[in-house]
Amino acid sequence: MKEIKLVVVGLTGSGKTTLVKHASQIPVVETDERSLRDIGKPTTTTALDFGAVDMGDVRVRLFGTPGQERFSYMWDDLLQGADGFIFLIDGSDPESLEAAREMLRTYREKTSIPFIVGITHSDVPRSMTPEEVAKYLELPEWAVRGVVATDRESALSLVGYFVELLKKGGRYG
Amino acid sequence: MLQELVDRSPEITGIVLASLDGFPLQYASRNTIDVDRQAAVIASLASLAKRSTQMVDIGAPEEILITSERGRMFIYRIEDLAALGVITAKDITAGMILLKIRQMLPFLVEELRREIETFGGRL
Image 1 (cartoon, rainbow over the protein chains, first blue to last red):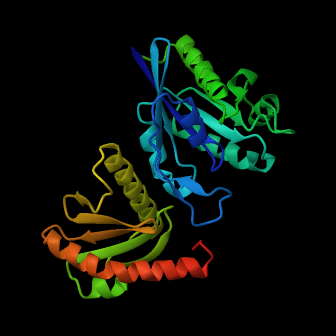
Image 2 (tube, chains in turn cyan, blue; image 1 turned 135 degrees about the vertical axis):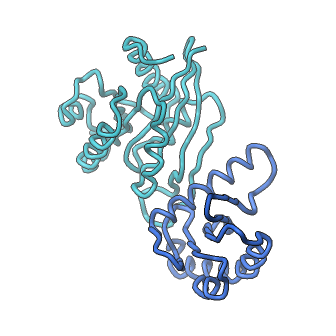
């Protein structure tokens, strides 16, 4: 079976842990700890998330990154050997878009591996659409997809979409 | 408390107390250290150690020991409150460090609980 390593990145609260958790077929390794500061959620990832899912003849290994800047030392380590990354943006929080663009720019400077953007909370009314975000980030529309990270089918659909893109690009295995 | 321990323990070069979400709470060091980054790494290691021992069903980690070229680092998870990183010289007696830390821990726990209560569950 061929293997793909995907890294799930994005700002705090963009849904990285949730996506890994819902897409994985195996019990997920989480490093969430109670957050002592108000970051809009009770826990935060302190090292990584890890899950895996088989998609046809491909085993996808999913590595979630911590979103907070002080854990950024993990980002480079987790990108080592990755075939691509999924950059998540909270679609219900337009105010985070500028910070997300900056973070995406940082990642694109770190690595030239393929990536797609997932717009989480896409089921929330008045959530930003993939088209709007693609335009803002100056990316082609095919590179930005909506996702409901809490929904297994939706999470798998995003991962599967990216795997198919990677297969076409021939950068896996 | 940490400064006192460093002052009376020549083998200890630094101590960093980090919240489990990676913020520095207290530190004392003979050398200059980037305490913000060090606190984040200590929290990550404490969390990874906990998950790793859970997966092989050997209970909660009591101590993480990293031996490097010129020194050692001991990391202790203090209940679900914080993580303590102790940086030492290489040629030390590990048992002595553990003893000193164990003597200090109840006081540290008490202090942390008091601070958390004061700040309504947050530091």
